[in-house]
Image 1 (cartoon, helix red, strand yellow):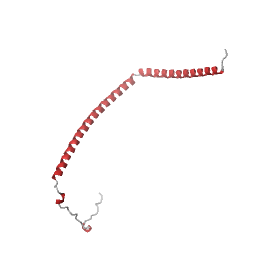
Image 2 (spheres, helix red, strand yellow):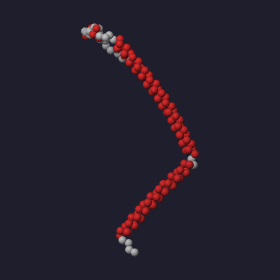
Image 3 (cartoon, rainbow, N blue to C red):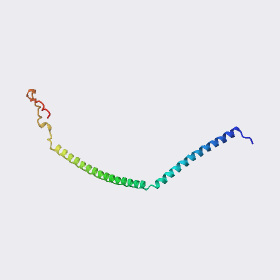
Image 4 (spheres, helix red, strand yellow):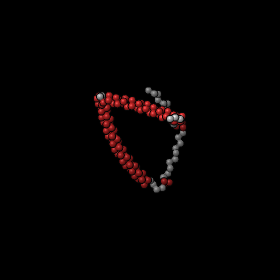
Length: 131
């Protein structure tokens, strides 16, 4: 049986691919073994578990307080919004009353003429010295 160069090249390429896959699987296997060893170590450390549990409880308490703050803030926002609406309504009513109270013809009231004050009549004083 005679093997051609093409068949030989194909077999060499197959072997190379299989070697690469085997090396990759060995690296993955080593990584998994290391992770397993670390997980076993963590499982035997009760102090770390208790610390994690305490941290989780503290985070849950903070979350509860934040939720309460959020609800309080939302209630305050609603209250302020209602107050603003009532103030705007009151302002609108006051403006309407002011419009109704104005005379019908603004030309009936004489306009005040501006009064000219001579510059010499204005008294000037020096600024007080800082203490």
